[in-house]
Amino acid sequence: MCTVSVDYLVRPLEVFDEVARVLRPGAPFVCTFSNRCFPTKAIRGCLATDDGFHVRLVAEYFRRSIGWDEPRAEQRPTPWPGDPLYAVWVRRSRMP
Image (cartoon, rainbow, N blue to C red):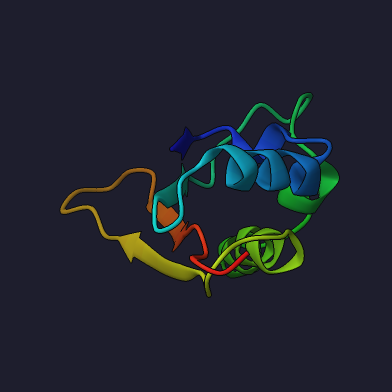
């Protein structure tokens, strides 16, 4: 699980490739994030885009790295005003 950190990855494909390397086939990898971040530390792609693009960007990290099934995404609504929670997850491919 990668919780509220994907915004700060400067080499996300390398990180996703390495996670795929160490996970067993069929194991899940979940990235959760909000639309809040530290602007001085986050990558530009997360600062200059909307929430939908951010979700698609994380899903694209999975698609462009090696060893993952097709990613899925979901937003969890909050019953009160506050930060949204987004999740993009996938399973380690069973195929080499």
